[in-house]
Amino acid sequence: MISVLLLVGLAVAVFVGFNIGGSSTGVAFGPAVGSGVLSKLGAAGLMATFALLGGWTVGRNVVKTMGGEIVPATLFTLPASVGVLFFVGLALLVSNLFGVPASTSMTAVGAIAGLGVAAGDIDWGVMGQIVSWWLVAPIVAFWVCAVIGRYLYPYLDVWFRIDRSDGPLFEYNRVASIPYPVPSATTNRRELTSSILVVVIGCYMAFSAGASNVANAVAPLVGSDAIGINQGILLAAGAIAVGAFTIARRTLDTVGNDLTDLPLLAALIVEVVSASLITFLSYLGIPASLAVSATMCIIGLGWGRATRAVRVRDAAATAVRGEKEADDDRDDGESKMSVDALTAEPEEEVQRIGEEDPADLQTKDLFDPSSTGRVIMLWIMTPTISALASFLLFEFFPIYQ
Image 1 (cartoon, one colour):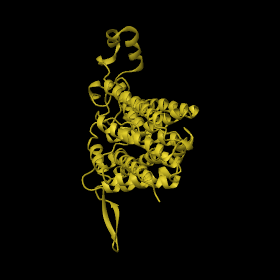
Image 2: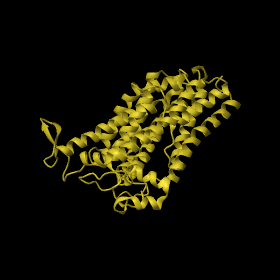
Image 3: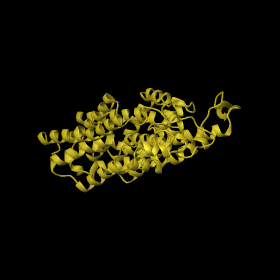
Image 4: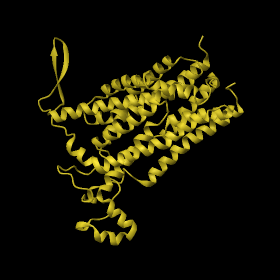
């Protein structure tokens, strides 16, 4: 007979997976839905499918790490597992209250570490490897996108500009009573190719989300042998699917309609870089945050795009000789670099670095140092608070015994 405590644990796991599905679907398929390429129902179906695929393949490596390598699996008694999952749910609450994409992966690892310290049995080598990647991954995400923003983004904007023609993207013909889609008469080849690319990248993002997040919902229960790893992955993926078909509709509206601040091309670059990074870490069994990597990609891309307003030698001259003297050396009276822009109108001919008008690279929303500092502070605080609270819980109530 299933115990009441196990039912509570399963309910918390479903709650975590449900919320993951609600938030990740908007991140993965918001660009496709917002550009009219995909319906919300189609986005939910693809999210459910590829999240399951990611969890079933790469994601089980993360489940094994969180379910028995940070601390011995014997510490995951059923009460302790429920306690750890409680802190994951708490991270989701903090994320919603503060409007910051707090990492459930980092919070879950913090809670598990608190359990291990309280029990005096934690593998510090594994923890060191995980924390090292937590520091390296956002830096890599930032600089990869910064390089793309400075050197490649304008060319990509010309080569792969995604424009919509008038009329629907597809029309439907029928074979007997079975409908099948065909490109409409107004759809050109470039539009069709770019639309397919948007959906494919969304599926890749969904795969990455499943690979990294399935463990957050069920790893403690799998570690306690309350459920098997296959059962856990199916449970988490099912909960993610429910979230995708229900509360994700709101996040799809939010992400899909807020693309004025983040152009569609920029959103796709962020998705590819962050999903690739998280998929790689999931393959290594490292629990890492997709939200953190994606946010650092946005910051890096915006910063790199803005730096096209100056050349490296001008920036160096400013640092060495002072702003006024360096300004006198600039060609055509170029003004100071502005730090925030991905929303400049694309041009058929890409201007060289240092020749772009800083007035075309202005937005106050994509790289705000004070807001960035607040987000990073909360990223540090969330797993720290989780680890401390978990330690106090298991120190005074050793329910892991």
